[in-house]
Image 1: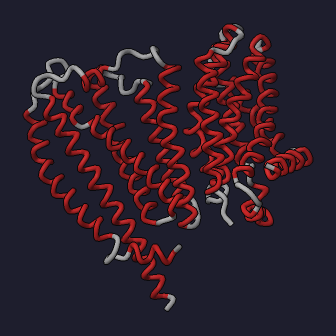
Image 2 (image 1 turned 135 degrees about the vertical axis):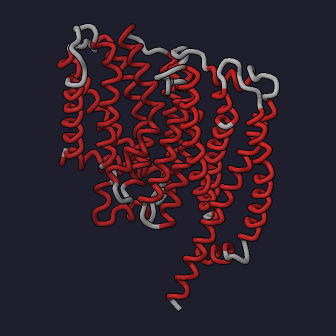
Length: 245
Length: 221
């Protein structure tokens, strides 16, 4: 198996496509960021929640990024188990790491908004989606711990792929059970009404742009992390070859 | 299939002779139940019923983690893991034999713990006994499935004692939630509500099939 990996991931070979994708994503992101920043800055101030409402231009897009990352991890993990190609595993690592960063930021911005909207002491509510996200965050921390504690690269990749698949199956299961058992226990979740319906005039476009920008930021970071992994593996192989010549 | 049966009998026989896991799990469960006593304010006799499902299942979960951590510990000696990986047929059968043996052990411990709990906290579990048994039987399928899979992984890593609970507990939250919900219903009315039974069956079923298939990637020569 090692021989096929070596030809695929040498800088001259497989990473060329990654390199190009990275450049394109990087430029799109660079172009979007100032527009996004300006739009959020000039968006109307919410009459009820004030400036605090602007967290909404960041928070839901972060959530999408987190979920995308975890789905990427599961899909890449499945591909790795199926085909045994190392670069799929590198993508799985990238998905988990970038997803965890997005998830962490989401878990930080959420309570800040909640404290502002619901008053002092209301940092957290055991609402279905909050609970689900928190559990997911734990699953991916466990995923990263599993990677760093398992001995042997190939074995760590295999174990992590298995756990990544388990983790993504857990998302609908958790959502279902929390909804089924916890339903009706909590007050209306204003946050998601805000996302769907109560976006006022002039708030739709910045929100859309937030989604777009953070999506490209996510994609850029994912590919960047992927490239680092692939290059590192290639470098290690090169060093190994030179030592053993 | 023969592999599953052979491993199942082998695990139960070694356990019957050494009684390591079952004693450790029982002492641990007993301790956790007692520890809870020091964690809450003084309560009337009837009030305890509200806390019983949660306390019981947290105890069950922790005891299961202790037991599952030892599932593959014996196989590390003499490199028996390699022999397991070389066994003929689908590796899923190895998983099934291991999981079934653990399922029996954990179920026995949970039954004994329920009796201890009922005696010490004066909670009358008898009217809910059949309901609780049903929940335990189904929920343990889910717990043992994921537990056996993750145990085979964590046994191969550094810090395996820490890693298993960290990996396992987040994946068992849906099972735990449904089980607590079902136990609450069983204690209140004697019957297990369908809203708890349905997810328990579905989730345990999904876990069983998924872990059976994924186990193939967890053993290595």
